Image 1 (cartoon, rainbow, N blue to C red):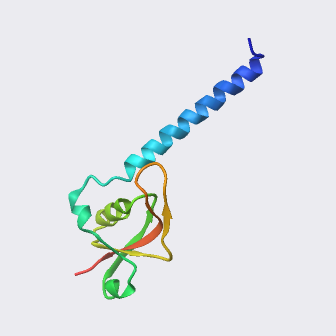
Image 2 (tube, helix red, strand yellow; image 1 turned 90 degrees about the vertical axis):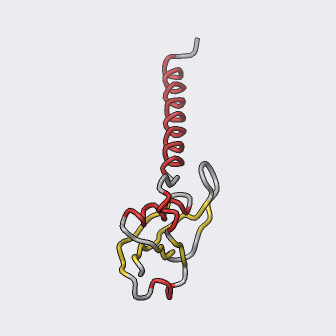
Image 3 (cartoon, helix red, strand yellow; image 1 turned 60 degrees about the vertical axis):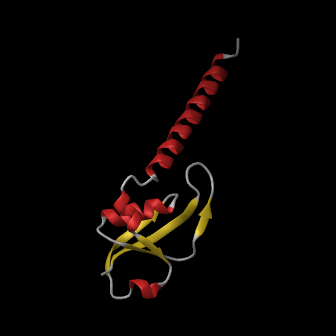
Length: 107
């Protein structure tokens, strides 16, 4: 039988591993848009597209483009302007862009 402190360390390490798995799964599920109206939100990196539109706020993206679309839709917007360079990430969940965008309502 292992020495008790080593056994406790092993149990704690497994518990941390399980918490990480649960966190990643929750994050992956939260990136999926369940709202079909959010699919209509346009994503652009062209500043001319949002010129004259109403700025609604900044939106952060954790994984797929669907996150930006959903967050923009919830603010009442229909266009997301990607700020800065796009950084592609791959891993658990949908591969996509990571970074920030600006939500706009354009007519």
